[in-house]
Every structure is written in structure tokens, then in C-alpha cells.
Amino acid sequence: MTTLQWGGRFDAEPDAALLAFGSSLEDDLVLAPFDVQTSLGHVRALAGGTVISADDERALRDALLTVQREIMDGSFTAFARGGAFEDVHGAIDARVRALAGSAGESLHAGRSRNDQVATTLLLYARDRAAAGGKLALAIADALEARAADALERGTLLAATTHWQPAQPVSLAFWLDAAAQGFVRAADRFARVVNDAKRFCPLGSSAVAGSSLPLDRTAAAYALGFTAPSRNALDTVGDRDVALDLAHAATRAVLTASRASEEFVLWTTPAFGYATLGDAAATGSSLMPQKKNPDPFELVRAAAGRALGTYAGALATTKGIGLSYHRDLQETKAQIVRGTEHALAALDAFARAFDALRFNDDAMTAHAIDGYTVATDLADAMIAGGATARAAHTAVGERVLRAEREGRPLDATDLAAIGVPQAPLDGNASLAAKRTSGSPNHDRVTESIAGTQREIASIMRELA
Ligand code: ARG
Image (cartoon, rainbow, N blue to C red; front, side):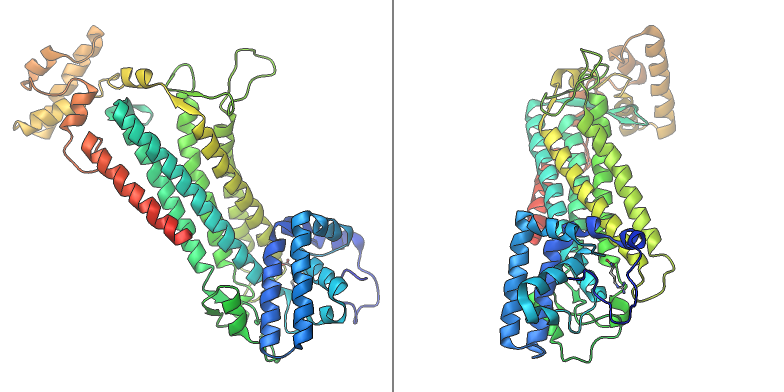
């Protein structure tokens, strides 16, 4: 059996090295189950337009369902690797021809790999965006659950800007902050899911549609799309949704990489804010005392890989003109590889976070280090009628003096600047906070509840 999908007008065999260079099979294998769905959709279009008989329809369906099983049990991969296939799409076609006999010869009627790849990528995007969205929501949910616990325990934390001590907050406030990014990540994934349900490429054929009476609407509905795509020339070269998937995946891992960076710092003995459970940590082959937070470091790094493959996919589409060009095969490889690794990184982040334990006392003990209540003192002066500039200068002078004397701000400073009731510790600072979105206990409670509602709503959308 020839493994190529053409031949009549060729006299000589292809150069093996060029064929191997041109093959995307290894990158494509993950797309196989989606390509079977695409093919079932095309069978629907063929049958709806009575291009094939009811017997052939049945034979093709049976063969495709067999391929689906062979994908699950691994035997399809062995078959595909055994032939010199250009891509998984051709391998599935070849397997169907082997299984379905003469009916198999009709599967490709009115179809090109161009509309086949475009459809398969949309089905893949739908599936992986839903998975990515659920992962991001699970992380957001875990962060909020830990935030609610931390709020009960009253754990404080010094918020930083520029990594320098800034103002007292609570651990709950930090965890709730981290959750926001993952909710936005889930929302981006959810938009990709919706976009991947709009227009079905099937029946666009190579570039100009088909003169066979394909039932494009039936195929589109069968695959859960809203409608057939409008313009075949556009459709076969359109990778927008697949690129949006790569974008959403990259952005989600970037979000995870930022939280990971903090966890790496927090687990150092110098910080002592958190301890990573043995299940998630690794040791050193040389230094017996070591316990390293590798999963969080690898998640940081995964953002680099995701960015690289996403940028590569974007760059591949630059200037290639409308319609299908072979360059687009490369976008597929990069989008698939980047997305798979990004989703694995989100899963790893969730697992590592689960193994992270916070050291409440250490965090709370450092919450007012570095004069983090200074802004509260200035605010108290402003509330008492001072100008912002005057308050800033007066408190700054007290900080300078305290620093020289090697002590924290205390009652003598409050007396000197005329705000005896101003907060000197973290809890008083949080209690004094008035604005929504601040680390005041009640405001954080509201934010956690609001975020949990949003998580539930995006989850319903993705379900
Ligand atoms: N292997 C290509 C891909 O996976 C499909 C080839 C499409 N068409 C063509 N005329 N070469 O994107």
C-alpha cells in the first residue's frame, strides 16, 4: 500500500530524506482522535449530499470508529510510524482505506487535507482550551480555599513592590490576588472554546470549495459548530483560533510562572515563609541537606517554552498570503507542542501548590519589617488635616530616625507627628483600610466570595 495520498502524475519515488523532512507525523499524533472526528464529520457531509451510498457511509463510520479504538490502544501509532506518512491526516486516511475496502477510497471525496487540518485544529483547540480553562479554575479555586483558611488564621505578610517591603497585608490577600490571574486565564481559555465552535471549515476543500453536493451544514452541526465557514479561501489558511489557544496557554503559564517565582523565594531558608512537601521537592546528588522546589522552577521555565513556541507559530504565519501554504504545517507543530507542555505545567503547578505549606509565624513576624506601616502613619496625618507632602516628609523623618536607632516605629513616633491612634502593627493597619480591594479582612472576604462566584460561572461555561 502506498503511504502517499497522490501518485498518478508522478513517475519517480520521493526522496526519502525530503519526505522525512516534510513529515509532521510525530507532532501530529496528539491530533489523531480529533482528526477521526473531523473525518466522521466529512462522512456526514458526503452522506447528506448523497455523494456516497448508505452502505459506504456505514463502512466508513465503522472503520473510523475502529481507528478511534486503535488510537486509544496504541496500535494506530505503531501503524502510522510504520509507514512513511507525511502527516497524521494521511495516516488515518490510509488506515481507513485498509479497513473499509472500496468504501475507504471515497473518504477523501471533496476533501483536502487543507480543510481537514483546519477543522482538526479547531476540534483540538476546543478540547485543550476547555482542559486549560478547567486547570486554571482548579488552581484559582485551590488558591481561594487556602485564602479562606489563611484569613481565619490571621496570617500576615509584608507586601512588596520592587521586592522591597511595602505595606502589611494578609496571606489571604496575596492568595486571593494570585487567584485573580488564574480566573482571567480561565476566561481567556473559555473564549477560545467559544470561538472554536463557530465556523466549520469542512467542505472548503483545498481552497475553492467543491462541486460535489457536500452537506456542509450537517457536517458543521455534527461537529458542534454553529455554521459552515463563509469563505473557503480564507478558511484553509486561517489559524486564528489555534493561535489564540497558544496565546491563552502561554498567558496562563506566564501567570503560573509569577506565582512560582514567589514560592521559590518563600521556600528558601532566608525567607522561611513556606515549606515544600517531599512529594513535590527534589534533592541534590551532592549536597545532602538540599531540598529544592524544582516544580516551581520548571513552571517558570515552561513559560519560556510556551512563549518560544507561540512566537514561532505567530512568526510562521507572517506574510504567507491567503489560502493554505505548507508553512502552516509548522504552526501546527508549534501550537501543539507548546500547548501540551503549557497544560502539563499548569497541572504541575496545581500539584506543587498542593504540597506547599505556609509558615504562618514567619510570615506574620516579618509583616512590619522595613517600616511597612509608614504609609498608615502618613494616611492618619492626612486624615487629620495634613497635606500629603507634609505627612510624607514627617513620617519619612521618623523612619530615618528609627532606622538610625535600630528600632521599629513606636509610640514616640506617633506622638511626635500627632497621630497617637495610628496603626503600628499589621492587624491595626489592615483594620484601618477603607477601600474596596484593600487587604481589610472584610474586603478580602468579599473578594474571595466574588471570585468564587466567577469561578463557578466560568466552570458552567466550560462544562
Ligand atoms: N501536511 C500538511 C499539514 O499537516 C498538509 C498538507 C496539505 N496540503 C498540501 N497540498 N500539501 O499541514
